[in-house]
Length: 197
Picture 1: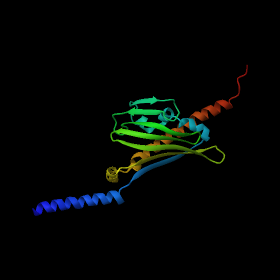
Picture 2: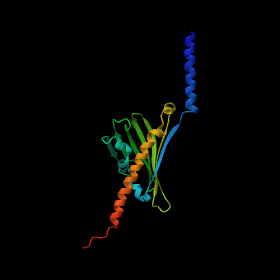
Picture 3: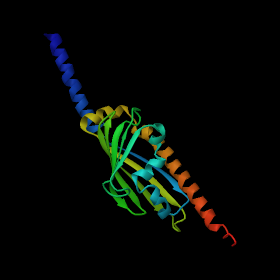
Picture 4: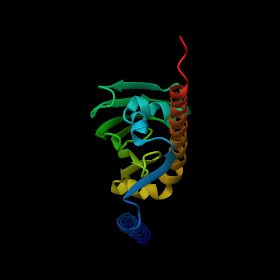
């Protein structure tokens, strides 16, 4: 009988501790933020982030699993358009991304819905901030996810910043390379003398 009381008392105490940790210690949400500076005006950078098809060209997850199934629904570069993906690689998983808001030459906002290897919904954005003379653009890629009470307990053991941050850095580096290389080629062509007739 005493053993049963000890077990029940320990379980109750453990339950109280988990509840207190969940209420006052465990994180309620996570954020990941990464930035880069691209040597191009905001209106030049914007087309590279303004549609899900364009984002897929520099997405780090496309490089993790080039063979993943990728589909796009809705008019490209419009609110409500969706990118759905399926991958057996657990670092990519299964999910979708939907454009929720567009600010021309300023930002794109999306909702990410994951179904595998875990379920959850996060919000993301790519924001553009030109310098004073609009010759360079600061690009910020942001992600936020809110946790349920149970999720917050488990997330104490996982560092989302360390898990996702490096991938965001790779994606932004790829975006910077693509924009600067493609527009250097265009600029060079514009400066070429016209061919004599």
